[in-house]
Length: 247
Image (tube, rainbow, N blue to C red):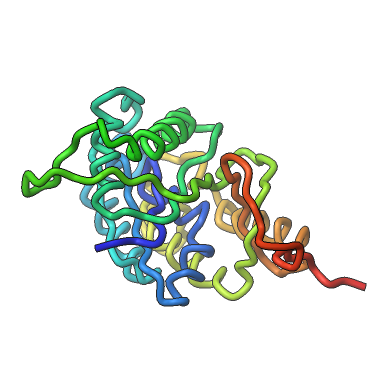
């Protein structure tokens, strides 16, 4: 299966929090979109590996993903080394995405910054034909380099150079995020007997929508997501520039 977009996150729920609205827009256009979680989130203070898999599967169904995989790197301890790069290169060559979206360059959780560099490096190296990899059946894989690599913005506010209007998909984005019931505050059941965390505080989910509203305001939309596109990007002509029409 070839994907148009492969979104990658260090932990299950990273992609939903940072980029789900944009992914849903592309899925609605009929494009194939998938998510790769680098770790199982096994060090999370709340929930279990089994519950995280169930939550990720539920979110994938709501979003309409074509595929979701987990690379099973070590949560908290994975490194941007040869083994990790090769593991990620195999997935990139398997799905041959035109666009890869990954973790923020820097963030509160150190895994996010490490994942940023790992993703950027693997996307480049995946295009080198002298790096040999094989798929699950033992067949040699062809080199493949994504055309675009972007990084979503997470907890720490970073200045985006791409802002996508998600006014028509924010509701589904929030439903996908809410699938991760073990991770966020809920007054409806006994989940909040688990340890309190930075993201389990009441009001955290509201802050996600608030951030989307602020970004939307910048482009004359109701809600938006921000991304950092690596490198320069070109336009066919000046008419390709989208600017809000405001009085």
